[in-house]
Image (cartoon, rainbow, N blue to C red; front, side, top):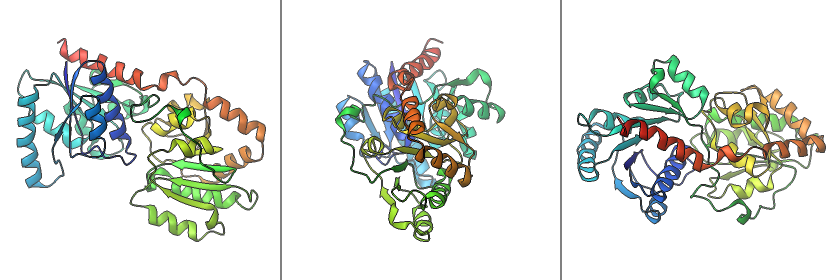
Length: 353
């Protein structure tokens, strides 16, 4: 089988879509398939090359002249590589792949990573639409994607070719108890509520520190918010970290306070590191946490509920340890090999037609 993945870029910036795509491409090539990636390029080119994945450079930025050039470039790539499957991970890619294939050509698969984006309905141009959680699949069905096209393949990142085994990472010497999040600096990630919740509990737990790992366009808003609290010296903006495992291994409580979250790859990493986890009960997060068995679920956009959950763990060492143990149970299904195998099964549906 000859497989092409298409997405906007392959930069190493903590983008979940990129991470999932790189994992799949590497594992597919390792399994003996001919695999290529079409993107605008990025740091992961070296890793892909080491696995025998061919990379085609294609600028898909949404400007008229670029789209025309991308269409010409895409046709040329397809003629050269002759794929059986094209797997699109972002909207521009699925439009190119859907509109420019010849009759009787490749099967087209699209993975919906960010269902909350209005344009994600364009993923329905594909023959099969992969949702990264049951919640995403149900939302796409409500928006008009036919059930016979939809397949659910939950995300999983453990054993990723992008990472070393967890035991090879050294935990950082964080000030403890340490509360941490690993998330893009976007409003939808709930950083505002996390900082507010920390402000509510910080005076009662003077040893506690908050670590915010990630970058993004709204970082300055969160820095301003933190600077206006009485505890700014205990709120640490760490920026993007290529090895977030070092933070996860060192922190006591991991928080993902997202307003929208199709699945949340980082939750599998936090679980592997045995963090006690607090996360919002939205979209695919409950599925990533075994419906609350592996982490505490709270309402979104509710800093008081988040503060209460933090107080419960910080004031009760037995509860904290219990949730650390629960997080680390039932991890097998979060392995990248399962994700690879389930995607392959979807490809075979189309190749066998």
